[in-house]
Length: 531
Image (cartoon, rainbow, N blue to C red; front, top):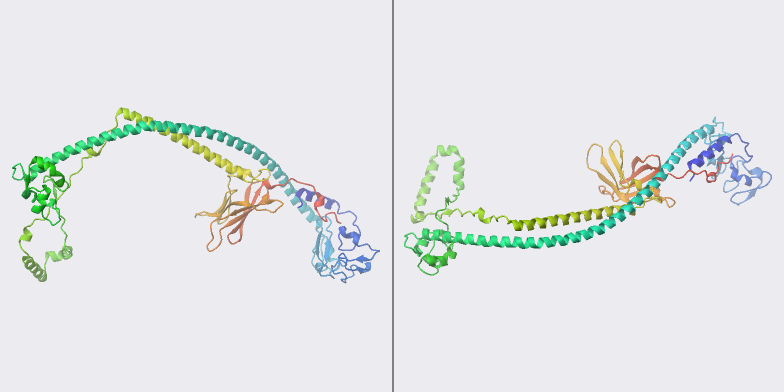
């Protein structure tokens, strides 16, 4: 590939040599093949297929299969004509364009016999190209200087990263030792804390048991007095039968057998014996001193409808009156004894004493142990966080070091950076070595156009293309991907973006990191010395 500096030298030579004496040779023959066209010798086709007299060269009749005997005419369909283009770039055109009335060569040599009015524009084209190439050469030169700075900065960063990594590795060893030491301190401090808390809890449980026993005994004494309706010092079977809540077979009444069972198989018990059978009674017994909640009354649907109809309530119809009389007659059919039975009372269960459930505060000695253990835990957790932070820093540095940033790490400055390009519809963001994304300009969610994959340039320079893959899937299509084409430039910026294929994006990105060293290699040009 020809460099910009080489082009400048060559163009300069071309312009300065425009007035040089042209070497005589048949029309359409490049200087590089002049030795095959000697006027006083027979001409051998360049493919070696045959030899003909020299006067049959450019006689407007095709003798050679490769068309080499007609370089200056349109006789051979596969022939080619060499435009000298003194002052500009020499070039080849198909023989079919010779004398076709269209000026293809800037020096007009292809239209020597067509009558076309062509002007020699080679000098002007050469000057324009010279300006363009000079600008490109300046950009390349400046970009290459910037690249050298990037390489030096990358080396410095690499050394800093390596030093930081070594420092973190040493810190990690120290922190690991500190964590283990503080773990031991924590566990040592937590043991007496645990024992003190357990003793405190045990004492509280014992205290609660005493309080519950005293309350249970008081409740039992109160229940005995309430159940002893005749105050004769005994609780009898008949007295238990008045408490429907003591019903054991859920038939709504307490039978004599049920009452005897609750009293331990006897007809009555005194205070001492009542204490023995209290466990049979206390879970179901409801004190008479507790407030009674009224039993919920279900309203029949028919009555609900009547209540909803205010007019019907205020002005009952004859049919309504008749229905009420029939209902009264139906109620008379039931025995009166069924109505004499009072519905079972529902009493509000006693509320637990909140003070009984609240554990008293720890004593000063236990508080000191708790504070010491908490301080040990805080110190341990702080050291663990510091160790995790060091681990994270090490992983980030190792990840960054693992990337292929080019032969001299010239692309490392792009790491952790993002570059945007705003178009009429979207905002494109390129974060080198990370991801490419697209977001609507006027609001909307971001679409992943691919995450970093690999360098994908040609074999001679793979660092000219970046490949980002496995982006957000297209509707009924493949996952999005992006190819980033890198070109030499003084600035680091996204120049353009396009979608040449569905869900496959192409992004143009300029960076000094791809600028090559300017070289004046004229030999890399073919044909620029031919006039």
